[in-house]
Length: 434
Image (cartoon, rainbow, N blue to C red; front, side, top):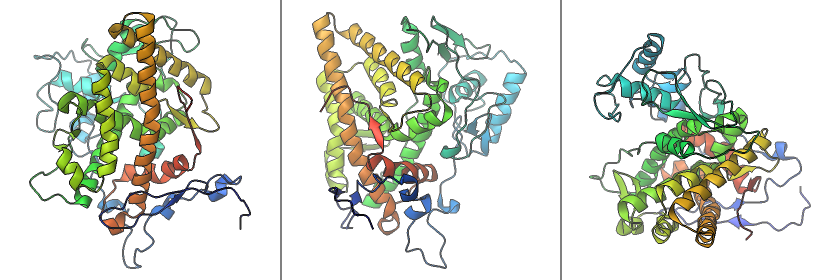
């Protein structure tokens, strides 16, 4: 037994629909023998599963994975991306056949299961945006994500390098030096615009009565779809794939909640003036629905982000730079394997944020004040995300009794990373001292 006299803090989240929640001890992992104290994934499955029952996390209960290109049921990971068989064959033929596809519209055609054959140009563009490359290495589940394609090698002067296609409308990648200071051009911000993910639908049935477990299950399923979108977006983010693949996985696993809540704030700011939470076009919570939910306090906390956007009148350029920085705001205590490259990449995006601020504010004083306000807002995300992590972990541990479903990838990330994050085994990169 431990003889430590260090004070122990227990986090106690709000109850969910009358169910008591578990406290979470934040000193649990501060032991010197961390490898012996870290609980495996299996310890987070419900212990009350009967001998004749299968675990709730058996693969049969999870929804089918979807193709990142057209939304059809995915048959596996093809050319580095989770896709259906149809999109796999299309991509291989399109690249090997060197087809000169042209869009008859504005290069923004909808690519879904029904309309995927309507415009091959937009379909191929979406394949490249998702990160498909011939010879891409496969990954199974989030924890086995591998590097896809050649790592970005960065030259001194930023230059647009089109992805391998005849279609000039395809998304460009930016190559830049991690060994020298970058002279910024509009190119980097243009790439951030071009790789911004499409809005994901929740598939929520608003005609049925709303219950706490139904809402949370729907939010979890939406969260997994958005997590896939975050992974795809990060692979297109300039400089990110120059980091060690383990670092890429770590950064995404540490920051996915922060980026999703920040994006939620942006949608709520754009479409609801910060008064409602715009989780998805088919899942919007107004004040009344928030009060009737089991997460009212969390909703109020999340709504402060779009309200700050309203107060500060945040521009899209600023939002895009800030979201990229949120991907880079939490690292392991021991640092990253490619720490030097990470530090330089983060500096690049901090400078790009300053540049975006300069587009709105003129003069050193006004720009400096706005930089202070926006960076304080990013720092505040840590406290909000900590509350969400805690609620998420507690709900996950009690998901069986609460009748709340967690998709497979969500389960994997929650079980592997949230205990470590809540135990203080990570370093939050703050712009300002508390």
